[in-house]
Amino acid sequence: MGVAIVWFRRDLRLDDHAALNAALKADHRVVPVYVHAPEDEAPWQPGAASNAWLRRSLTALDASLRAHGSRLLLRRGPAAAALERLAAETGAAAVYWSRRYEPAWIASDAAVKSRLRARGLHVESHGGALLCEPWTVATQQGDPYRVFTPFWRTARARLDDAVASPWPAPDRLPPVDASLASETIDALLPAAAPRWDAAFWDDAQPGELGAQARLARRVDALLDGYAALRDLPGTDGTSMLSAHLHFGEVSPRRVVRAVRSAVQDTRASENADAFVRELGWRDFSHHLLYHFPQTTDANFNPRFDGLAWADPDPGLLHAWQRGRTGVPLVDAGMRQLWRTGWMHNRVRMVVASFLCKNLRMHWLHGARWFWDTLIDADLANNTQGWQWSAGTGADAAPYFRVFNPVAQAQRFDPDGAYVRRWLPELAKLPDPALFEPWKHAGALVRLAPDYPRVPIVDLAQSRRDALAAFAASK
Image 1 (spheres, one colour):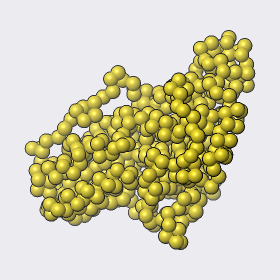
Image 2 (cartoon, rainbow, N blue to C red; image 1 turned 60 degrees about the vertical axis):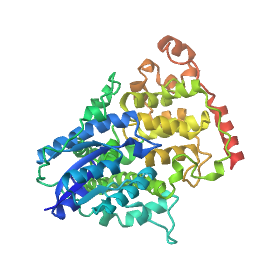
Image 3 (tube, rainbow, N blue to C red; image 1 turned 135 degrees about the horizontal axis):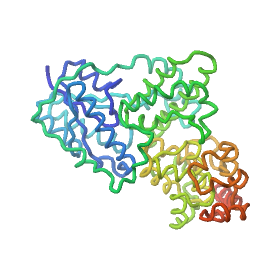
Image 4 (cartoon, rainbow, N blue to C red; image 1 turned 45 degrees about the horizontal axis):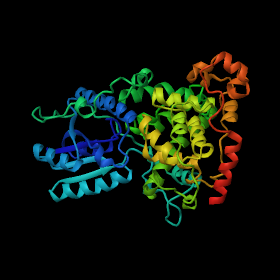
């Protein structure tokens, strides 16, 4: 029995882990390691909120490995050097890992493979983060898709095979030599001080067990009304699995299998299809990032490279970041993000449209803020979401979409439950004033004296200005 290193990254689980399964199938004695190498991810190193989740997820993975007879080694990067040293220490004959699809990691992985193979090691990388690998879904001409609907039509046709046989977690793992040194989690990822992330954990449990518990709790609710409820931020209508999926604490294959296995009737099947389609959007974002890696910093659609973005105003940007724009739905979303590290997807689109269209600031200002404050900060999803909202991304009809935050609140938060939760200073306002408080000055002064009297920008005029600027650029 030879020794194999299994390099954990964004696959922090034991269930349905292709790389781990391959190493065990080859009859290797597995040495699990996580290499902390933010420098390998430049210029998009993980942000503060993401690292706060990672700290807990690594702790959970180590506990799970110990329960199976093993343990997790923590080492400092760069990754290539760390893996070379560990291979020398253990006499490893092979290294296995799960693929990542960010541009920096693709380049880094190629270099790591080359270095390790030059030392005579067997190296394998495996999928597991997506339903379909980005290069396996293509048009009839062999080109990457640029629009979601035909992409999903092709990907969905092979979905049954893709999710057919998730691997169960191993019953036991071989012990790791006690002489092998490991960094401490506190040394690699110090706890936040002061505890700005304390509220993150009120309803979140990082780690594989947390992911499994969340999935088990949410399956029935998803099948009962996901298609209708997922757009209502004041309800518990989403899966809340995004961070678990981002860190690989549960595989998308396992999620699809769980949802499909619970289907009992036509209505449940329709809701299951709607939910799985959202996982398809996640795959599509990675598909775009893989084939168009420049889009992390450049417009997907170069027609808008000449767009006259507004000069970034620090005061306006800060008001947006901290939920002080005077537009309740926008402010509620930004307060939710600041407090919990997460924001409802419908509201993400609204706050992004407000920044890019009403304030007409470049989408990178928003992408960078989300990158630092989201626990589920995923480069593919973040890039795709911001470019879609800005009108510069992969969309058949992009630039003239401007979300009206008042109409969005009236439609998707009609009883004001979401706004009242995250803007408690507005809780006593009657519903009409809750949507447009600047039109109810008396009530605003009397019941919410600390809230902005008027929005930081005129919604109607800024919409017209944005459409004119985009039309001119197009």
